[in-house]
Length: 328
Image (cartoon, rainbow, N blue to C red; front, side):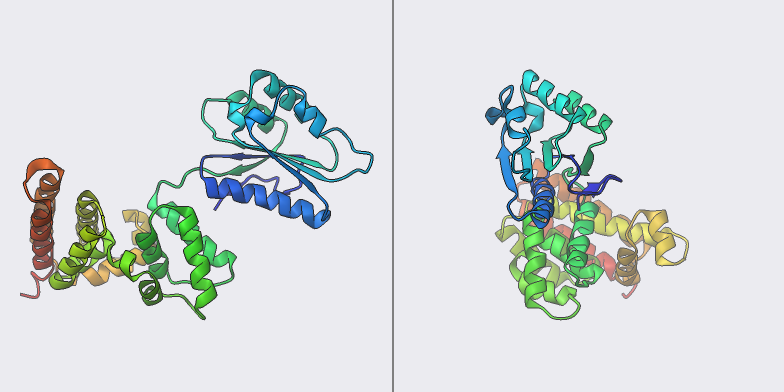
């Protein structure tokens, strides 16, 4: 979710939303507009792009009204404002107008940094809307969406949803809303699987999970479905490598509570429990053999072989066999 600074009043004179995650930027604007309209249903909202702001335009938009109407002025892509308009905006920071809220959307980075620095120096309310590039961030986003809607979902369900939907936050938010609207009680992994069968089963992580559990037939079925639905082979070898490495890390770690092991190994606690279940048939030699097989497949899908699909099938079978080494 978007992170805010200590000044958490959406009706602060100036709000600056910083980042490039479109959903979070839109939500930052919506939050301000909703707060303004809660205070005054007739609030006037002006949503502008840099080409709509010339020198003097901001002064016109923020000039006091005879009727003291509340107004929200949204400026998108503020990093692209002209130098003269930036001077106008900086001047406004020093003398904001009552009943008017200025919202600047800024991509962050070097371009337009002077404007961003000036806003911060003036004490603007700041909302962080950075791109979520890490799977852990998207997982936290999904958990936050469920909490925000007053519903509970298991850690496995949240992970399954991220695996099924991918990195698009709008799609993740929409999926959470759909599940909350349609399902009563706690949302678990089985529920996510029913709603997103095609996508969830095509996930590279599903292939890896079935393989490290020694379920070769199911892993191969998931592999074929993944490839048929367009999952990149390199994503599958990556997921297989992550799954086997997790087995190796946990098997060589000292015993302890999931929370302690999570900190030591850099995994979420729920994943510690899952990997513990998956590692029952593994041996140290099995981990080494599986990693070698995955490395060979990775080279094959990156141009070192003639048939990427066959390379993946060999790796999946090798990992599944390694998972059953201790069981004989």
